[in-house]
Image (cartoon, rainbow, N blue to C red):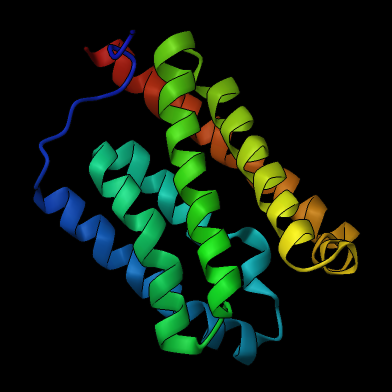
Amino acid sequence: MNTAILPQYRLFSVRSLLNDVLALAVICLVPALSHLSGIPVYFVEPMRVMLVVAMLASHRTNAYALAIILPLTSFLVSGHPEPVKMMIIMAELTLNTWLFYLLVNRTAKPFLSMVAAIIGSKIFCYALYWVVFSFAFVRDEGGTTFLAAQAIVTVVLSAATWLFLKKSDSQA
């Protein structure tokens, strides 16, 4: 297994704590920002953005913890997503984290690993929506604008991952 591509961070650090506080603050503010601005801020997938930041700037355990804590915090603060959808999002973000670490360790290709992890976890999420809710729900959730936004976020997060890990690899 090639772990050289990922920077090594201490399990508990000020960096992780700051990352977590920032992630929780962002998730708590998203509903208010969306409501006040009229812009659907959730289109840029703030939970996934904060998760990827954790994967790059923290350690694996912290990323897994945030995959669970972010949807739960959002539910507790704003009542959204609903409990069943919250659990699906938890599973999606956890799968995203697991797939990324698995793929980047095996391939040493951060961009492709992140793209595949995001797409794989999204397919899993929408499959669960279909099974738990309905195809109509999937169709409503997967509107053209939302999917376009997700594609852009996927490319941007994957590029950021590649740049960050390329920089970290060259400093090692």
